[in-house]
Amino acid sequence: LSGFFDFYFAGVDAFLFDIAVCLNDWCADPDSGRLAEDRANAFVAAYESVRPLNGAEQRLMPALLRAAALRFWLSRLWDWHLPRSAALLAPKDPTHFERVLRERIDNPWHPPL
Picture 1 (cartoon, one colour):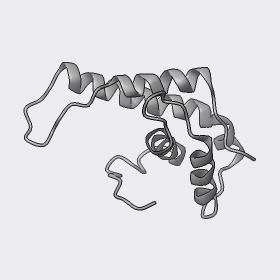
Picture 2 (picture 1 turned 45 degrees about the vertical axis):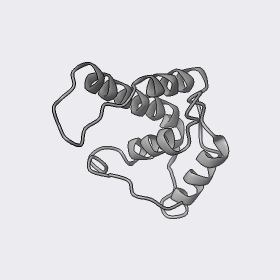
Picture 3 (picture 1 turned 30 degrees about the vertical axis):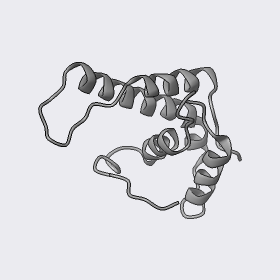
Picture 4 (picture 1 turned 180 degrees about the vertical axis):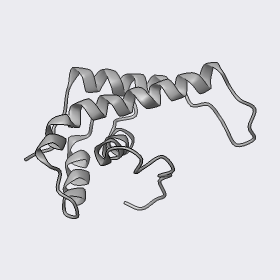
């Protein structure tokens, strides 16, 4: 994996929230919102090779995945329905993160122990 991720808001809350944001973005099927568990497992394993998740983080992963999906859905809804004039801002369709949120509600995911 190579690329650039804007961590402007990262590190101001629980590390687990930042992980959930990445999982929802990098490991979600774009059409269904379903979590690609093989990619999610690889992401978490790589993260845990540097900083293992504690028991509370393991248990809270489904809730943080939902919170991250809700945060991005609401952000996109806001930009979609209340657009701002900005040369580089193009509102993105909010339905993707609605699908992700619904999928996280219907199919909670915990990292493997």
